[in-house]
Image (tube, rainbow, N blue to C red):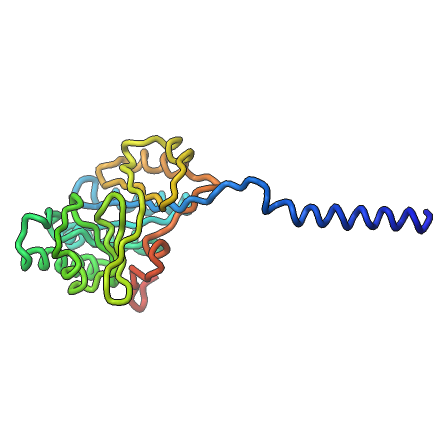
Length: 241
């Protein structure tokens, strides 16, 4: 082969390699959408087996979630907190699962504090995340969360609040009832904000497993509340996994 031919071939290879490097950033790429699964354990229905089955489903599908447990339930079924706290975030939702807005300040504070303490004791953890039953809060919530050493509040449909530099700041998200939307709805969903999909312990595990299995795709990434906020919201004690 002549030297001139070799030069031409070498030049063509270099140009082709350069094109491969330059082109990818300009090709259409599918945006990755953060998705957080919420599970509310608010009454005794299906417990404690539902918790074991949920834990097995999340592990089987290699999916993480954020679970909120009512204080009274945590006391009655501590295994629900223990078995679900390994890779997931665990939070509280008052002690008796009551709407806070109709209570006086002292009762509100007691409900939030007692709920958190029961969850923490059940799992030997420090939970720092809260979700108000029925989304019911008032102007007292920030003082109550601060006094309860809670750093993140996911009580709302279009926002969450996290504690930063001495105050609670609002961040946008979009919350959906998992029982009201199909898997395909979420697989095709386009959103500028992180997506939260909410279930409770009345939802059959079979339906949850089918949902989790079907919704997994390349453009959806499952996260916990800690990942979303950048805060460590479930602190495990020594000896806990």
